[in-house]
Length: 635
Image (cartoon, rainbow, N blue to C red; front, side, top):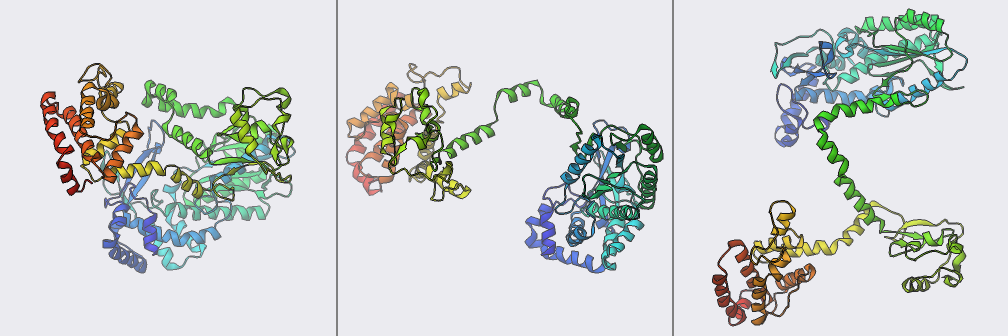
């Protein structure tokens, strides 16, 4: 179960590793290869080791900027074997509950209940306090760790796992996953020679982010120890609030402290001791320090000189969030313009023009759904304080939309003022009403108000008056039940398939006539091919064209019991009722007429030849052959 859960959690079609298999392969054929896969993974957990080929991976370089120039401008992503990912996923599922209990609250990455927004909100509050000119000098440092994952010392990682309290077999297996790594760089689609690293964590390995969180927790313990010994003076955002010394999100480090030289020395000592022990490196050019507004310039210079970190007025971004301190300015949102500008060349100006002039079909459909669902709501009078002209709905509209005008003396009337003895008193109004509105309002009787309950919109489906997705779904199904039943009847007809398809095209107004082709710019003219007089719509083709009227007239002459009109509901009713009931001679006549017309339109036969054939068919259908039709199941 544990292994199957790990496999199901893997993305089905992520980039495969050297084995070439995505997770979808194992998910689809689990019934065939599942037992062997489980046995193989259990063997790895029992021995604490696995073959060298399982730890092999491809290294794919992804540009971090638009125009990369150096190797630092690329992010190395490891494409691991899928079975190796299954192993680390199982380890991860066992490790995650422990991390939630052991990792300090300052770390917000990859742990349940913690996220990027937490740190971003705290930083906003910190900068807001910095902008207020109050007593006290404070600073915040945004540390940039250069290639943090690639620099981690394996010895430090082993010590961190041991300090976390993991047993020796678990530490051995995790370190086997880390130290067995070797890879080949994919360059122009071809792998390079194998490379065997001596440090670092693979980006692309499911367990690597969590191992880095364990490593960074060592820094949290060191900082908290310095705070407890009062060598590090943290900041406080409010009276009685928590002390803030640092925030972590994986390798994003945010340091906060009181702006004094002694604390600055402690911060410098802690940071450099930690990066030296772990093997990390601080990118001093990208790291920034910001001071509170009340910090003197001389003190700022001394602290910056102590830390070797340049000062700034504001952080541009933190964890992808724009950090805006103080009043909003146009410059704060320039990144949106830049992002859109980068997308303009691929789109092209024609695409922009179309997207501006044509609304999205998704939103159009959603808005159409809203208007349909709105019909299920009704306004319920309770205390009657609602304005009479806006609170009473008839025909889906408020009364003010159904009268010519509302007299100025009546415009402020509430429903409560007009209800007398459980009925609306329209005689007291100066506004004139149409007769149907007067009848609808006077027919409403036994209207009782509830003074303690406000007027409100209620869901008219069901007795509770509360909207639910389930009740709305059932209600919408009932609204379209007749239409759905009609289409089912058409496709269940026991007739040739071409007749089913013909009825379906008629119902959708999708018959490929010349008029339809002309509207779609597929034909130069929409004139009828046969007579040349009218536009070739489906109505004209089957009911108005002189030739087709002769066909139907011939059917009526031989006893056809209907006079066809060209309205869709009547035609659909005729066809379905004829095919479903199979009584009388309706079905053979309709089949005969349809075959005659469509046979001519499709095959372009000579009119006289076709009519001569019909003259032979009609007497057979109307006379002796009707009995034969009954025998074959028509009647």
